[in-house]
Image 1 (cartoon, helix red, strand yellow):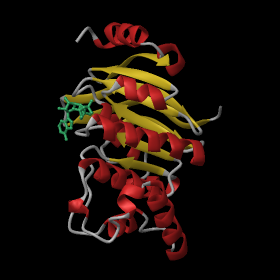
Image 2: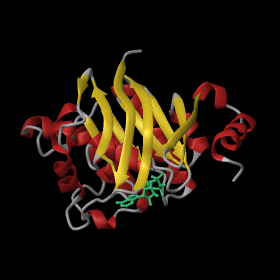
Image 3: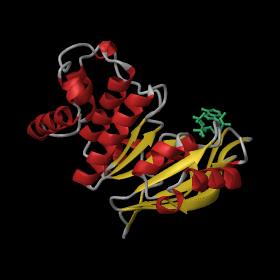
Image 4: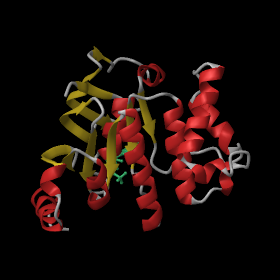
Length: 241
Ligand code: ATP
């Protein structure tokens, strides 16, 4: 599988002392799903934001064969790198449809309308509420809207920051099910940040384990099928917590 995203020696600092990621390297193949797993504060969000160009970082980031580390975030979106933030950040006072329009602001009108239809098709829960204010959506529906808004930009790589955060188990299941469909139908590559290893396993091909800003190990998803194998990996890489 060809590499769509190549990250080499990526370090993220907030100020001179606070280092959130240190010399992180990983690859994401076209259409594959790679998960970053680690405790709170391990640096997962910082790595995703650095790939999206939202926080300053050092190191090399190559997307589809081109270096992108010096491009501003907007140009990375245009290249196909889209970040869906943790906490969703939808605009409550706008309608669901208007929130989707925001995600595809640079897409010409006809294509934009087609994409809105595609997203609403994919997430019937929010299609029923498309012309109502986004604040009326439940947590799970807001997460669907956030993912839908990300899809509006026509990404080739979606950076998904804790899509299960704050959701009831049934909704987590539904969101992951939908992501699996999107993956199957669009061959979109995904970098997924999660704390929920079991859900992550349903979607991803590879897991990188992060501890204090460093990748301390990785496993193929197929080698983490059983609960015992998952627990063994967590104990080995993240400590028995
Ligand atoms: P979480 O699951 O809690 O979001 P995470 O693994 O995504 O954690 P990051 O949010 O990347 O971790 O944080 C990594 C480290 O960087 C933490 O020590 C955090 O306190 C610090 N950090 C994150 N954002 C900032 C910021 N804007 N300014 C200063 N320090 C930050």
